[in-house]
Image (tube, rainbow, N blue to C red):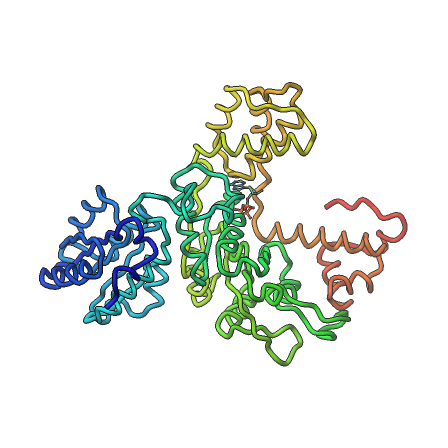
Length: 475
Ligand SMILES: Nc1ncnc2c1ncn2[C@@H]1O[C@H](COP(=O)(O)OP(=O)(O)OP(=O)(O)O)[C@@H](O)[C@H]1O
């Protein structure tokens, strides 16, 4: 039996407070006694309703709940907890067969689950581990994990400015999942800070000293994506004059960030799944696979559930990458962050451009605070940048902010059109670089000449046009 001294990291100030929920009165009493004997401070509830009312007014460090309760489902209670206390760990007790396997439970974000009848040592160990993972966030002293003076540090999330409680909840969750090695899927609209959060998770993880490698799956043309991701060996295809290390291998030991995973072509989804299952990667043209050890963080602004239902995204890959999912709120859902972010962008842009800008006029700030922000934080940055560029006074007036707000955020293109534009632009850059020499351009693109000609044809590009001075081709 565990002693109170080894109980958990947060015990120095006061014992951790647990809520135990079960409708079996005898089991509940027994559990409470055992946990109290171990040194925990225990409260009990015999129904979902009783648990909800206690959670509404009291602060707990961990919840242990039966899945089957007389007035509802322990999973529904868990969903409530996830919404209202996202960083509060929950351990579920299930009758045999209620949850088919551990994957489903952990996919939901449950800290642990035990199948009844369970061994009390297993429960104590599960509680200890979940509290350790939660860190001091739930210490009864009330210190947040990253409050000044607490044991937690904020360096990992220093780039993410926010005073919103919704963002704080996401950051609390991010910190917890960072410690585990589970795959994380970050959902959120464009410009909400998904990449920033992915980097923060990497920095808060035990992999922080190893590389963080980011790839935008939607921005690389399909023919290039495979060799970008997995690399190729010399001679893998015509033009592959040297071996090329893939981004998966470059992330070895660290974190691979797959941005816009929803845009990954189906053929590559299968290959990525294989890498995740086998923890090994086979470069294009190679006969043998190389072992890789990495953590996957993915992001999407698309509704992956809809893509799944439409058969555009593989379910097996989806379950692998979405072990824990984090949802970033839009900027409109956290307006309290607008003045903070606008001030920060203003200071850094003023510094960058060597301008003396002291702030926003109150009406300008009001215009910022009430704008709709479809492009989220990225749009806010652009608006502040434009206002800074045009400012003639130290205090930015409302008119300048309104003018910048009238400029539409970047056109929202469909994937196919965005890809077409990228590909065409990429080919033009290559042809400019090589002054229209197709062999050289194909080599740079790591394609053979025939393939490269086919790409040029698809985009109506004639290499001759680039020989000599290099034209201004309309992009
Ligand atoms: N909370 C924040 N504090 C400071 N800067 C932020 C914050 N959130 C986002 N940004 C800045 O806004 C810009 C967009 O952020 P980021 O690229 O992480 O968003 P994203 O959700 O990954 O966008 P996309 O979906 O378009 O890839 C970046 O310049 C980032 O530094």
